[in-house]
Image (cartoon, rainbow, N blue to C red):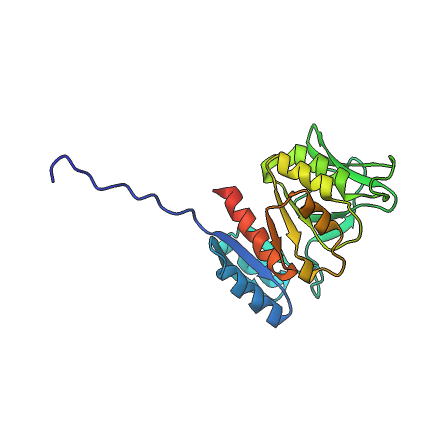
Length: 214
């Protein structure tokens, strides 16, 4: 009819494209199925080796590469102890050195690691709480904190800080924990968005990544 216009349809957000690099066939296929079965995600190729991925991956231009750490020739994400003053890289897993708290501070070139030997928190050093607190202030709503099986109460105050700064907190369920200590303490303070079995946490991580792009 004159004067009427059809409503404009808003196209859905493009799915996040995830490439998988894994040398074990069963794991590679399981990851591919899981990714394609998660709303907002699409598997953009599943490769046996880093060499194959490098050769073919440019055609798909994935948003995320899920890469095995221990590939036959070329390894995936590097895992290492954090160094004081080190700039944080997206392609690296950082582990706190023994007897040092590891925190994050904003440097002139971006977020960087800070190590200190301040007093123990929750009877331990390194502790999760100082890491979560400082990460929450740096990353705010873009931070995803995960509290897994463990003894004691470390992580509960840090989880609260993540929530207060708008971030997301995932907690491992009691049924899938070896020791339901740290997760239970975070749940007591209601510093939690989801309580999940261990094997459902990777899917929740993907979903959180998708929501952060909307």
